[in-house]
Image (cartoon, rainbow, N blue to C red; front, side):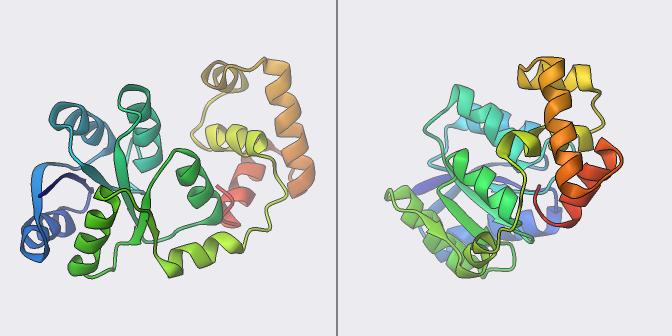
Length: 200
């Protein structure tokens, strides 16, 4: 029997999975969450074998939630669900130790089989998801992407520096480099350019 916590802001999909997964395999749903903070709380409280979490949720998204969870539960097995696996996002998820990546349009029986595989210590990335990871023409470094990601959340240079534990001058240098590479006139324009090209 594999225990899971389900986190997805789409109530209909979440309730459907909660109902169907036990029918498709030896899966017990311990708890459900509709956003990232709730997913972290549920995983810390219930200690599931596998956390099944949506990548894109309002507020704290799947990646941000996982980054927080890793600090307290570093060995948590994670299956991430997504509709749009952008190359930069997939790379970041793998850096955070996500063991599985499945399309949200996948059949519940497939999701159940992937959960079982992850519980056995294997990894799984759906072919349509991994294909997108190969198409990565991003000229920006990881740190440049980090500061653009924070910019996109509306943080100031000082706030970005504090959040990433960098000097403000270093943040300005990264932003300047990113603006040059994207031929943008502002850091916000550079962040928008990166999002539009699926680099974030």
